[in-house]
Length: 43
Length: 357
Image (cartoon, helix red, strand yellow):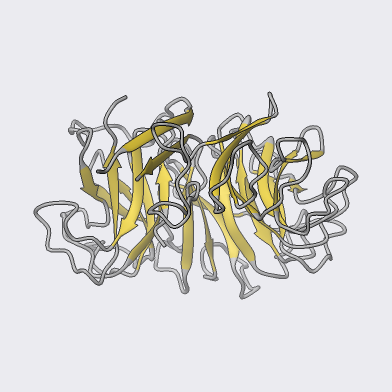
């Protein structure tokens, strides 16, 4: 189950994922979970 | 068609970051950044998990089995990444600056990212750790100092496992669960209990207790704490924390450490008890709002999807709102994608629920 956390300013979400296509320029192993931060669009 | 909606429930001020800022471009809105990398940008060669993020998003703490995140220095299984400077540093470090001798887990960050609470079974984070059990620690990332939190008033070690923990946004208070019966007087109830320590005064308080101080008669878990450590939310299977708790299911509570009152949060719309399982989640900085999950269908009117939903309770107005709803205000159907909703996995001072269908 993915864990996630939200920054206090509500602008970013940190989460773990096995996905290898969330970022470019890296060679991620599909069997290794990584940590990502998604910066949300302003609302 | 995929649509999404962000429901803003409660946001709080941005705290000051720790080290001086360097000139660097923050991640652009709408972009995703890989965090579990070494300072030189190398991908982690091991599994990473359990991210926590500071209020302004600059610092991210996480656990990892990777052995290549640090070019030099001690081995660690907890790390903190400064997204502004692009630096990854070890978080769990022995008192002598060397590697820890056992596992560490579950970091949570203060608002600024300066203070980190985590659990560890290592014996060399602080002197005199001989209980061979999981303890709760706080590290000041600016000063490099580590404190053990789950100790009795006389300094004796916990006689039982402790954790998980959560740190207050200001970094001055920590809440944690423990099976130890020697931390405060009268703690021998043989259940997981919730505690809170004020790091400035050193006072350790029992949290999962009734108004008269009686311990809960079943396990209490999943705690989160408000900005200055005044309020703590937790979930509990205990039936004696408030009067008339006869639903036989875990409920969500808040303990006010100033007034010494414990109140039920997962309250039905008619003021009665929830008719389903409720579990704790997060609290905003001033402790006014509590987000939690519940399978109960009677917390708000019209909850008909028959599954877990996310709710936010306003403790001031005593109003509960269903928040995992579509842009049109409808509930997700049971069995649909996203139908099993959950609040943030990590305690957070903001509360913004993103839903998608």
